[in-house]
Amino acid sequence: MSNKIGRFLSLTTGEKLLILKYCVALPVIEGSLKLFGVKTVSRILLSWPKAMIASSYSADVEVARQARILSIVKHNHLLPGKCLSQSLALWWSLRRFRIESDLHIGFCKENRQFLSHAWVEYKGKPLVNAEGVRDRFIVFDQPASRDWI
Image (cartoon, rainbow, N blue to C red; front, side, top):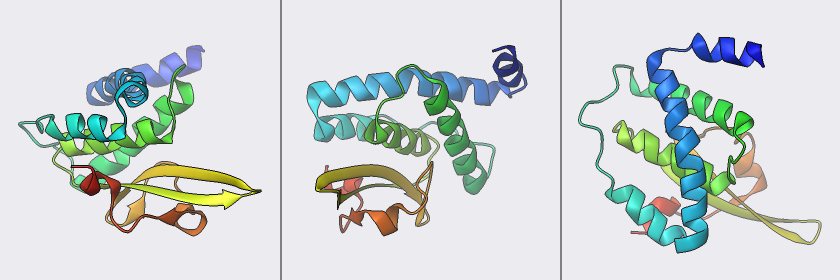
């Protein structure tokens, strides 16, 4: 436990704030999805104003930072939510930094069971534990976030 605290304390202030943002956003988005559905939640997230100032990092560096922080939070949070809420949180957070990304939803059938998965792509590359998702899941034609408006 003290090792985790030490690692947290060694982070920059911006990274600590990002952890806090994801810690709050994940359960709020997960609960909102259950109460209001995907369409309403995505509209609310789309209506949220973008940050007034862009990140001091390049977009590529910011995307890597955000994906790394979300990965840390989802592995250590008591209520990390499911892939859709995690993907919506990352997509929303990147949007706040004026970084365009795409939210994708795919589906597949394994062992007679229907499975679905959501993930975020930046410049066509899946983020946060999305290794092989395009091979495993059939993806809807357009990013989901554009269809829900």
